[in-house]
Image 1 (cartoon, one colour):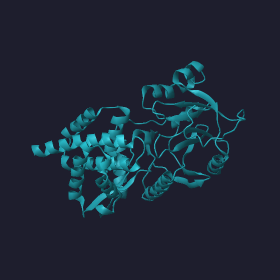
Image 2 (cartoon, one colour; image 1 turned 45 degrees about the horizontal axis):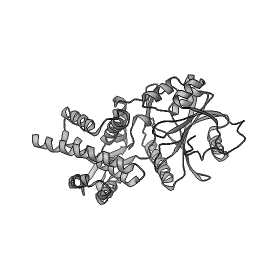
Image 3 (cartoon, one colour; image 1 turned 135 degrees about the vertical axis):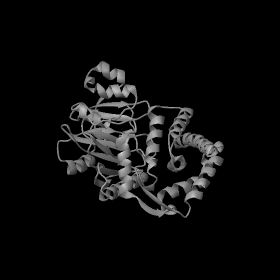
Image 4 (cartoon, helix red, strand yellow; image 1 turned 90 degrees about the horizontal axis):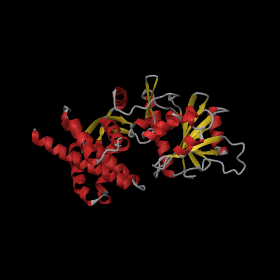
Length: 374
């Protein structure tokens, strides 16, 4: 059994009275524990993109078959949350709730997510992490949710609790996600409407140098040496072009989600719900979220190569009006996301940053070609 991030569970030899769970790991090293009872709603925490994972979620009613479990490499085990975690959850959700667990995406910011539910009603979500960096992320997300709720942004979580519980950082939040909620894997009207609402309700004029985004661009400007030498000159050129446009200028930008993807959104009875705001920015071009959604789905769901991704972007711009600002915003987004991964600095982050840098080079070639055509 993979034991990653299982510090939230009791280490108890007498397990006969503990609840029974199905535990499985995907090929990326992500792990889930879903309760044996009320399995269907427990699976709402699982958002697969691969065919095998989609089949597992669709036919989870067959999990009691040992043959089915063997095919999907699923183990049966008895587990229970630690007393300190149960106490905080009971304080806010009462007695007799159930839970399913996602042990987190392997990274330096790895966090556990617990889905809390009673019957067929999802009550909320609990995120847990141990590092100081995760603590700062939870504090930031809590402040951003409070800010956005005060601004009247709809269909986002509300903070229930944020703070230390024993050795863990814990963040509880409400949810509108319920059983049967769908994940939209293609960018459409619901995504556009939410992005527009974020801009309309939060945009303000401010100096570029006072934005969080500026700090990322400055960090990248000073740390291109962390990237392969083939990218450095082009990235510095792109940084200079952005600075030439925005230095000492007022920008009229609004809040962006920062990690706007299918797996951080869902639709339930025509209500589009968006969650996980820990990487949000208060001031950035609104199409940041569009580009993040498009590129993350192309990379992680469609698993396209660099060449195919750049070709996809070229096709988008072939039918796009007002190309100059849009391509500049794409370049600014790519500079930001490269800087983000360099700053995070975990295992694999440099490789991710390098792949985005390759895409940036292709976009800069496209920009040059468009300029020559004018």
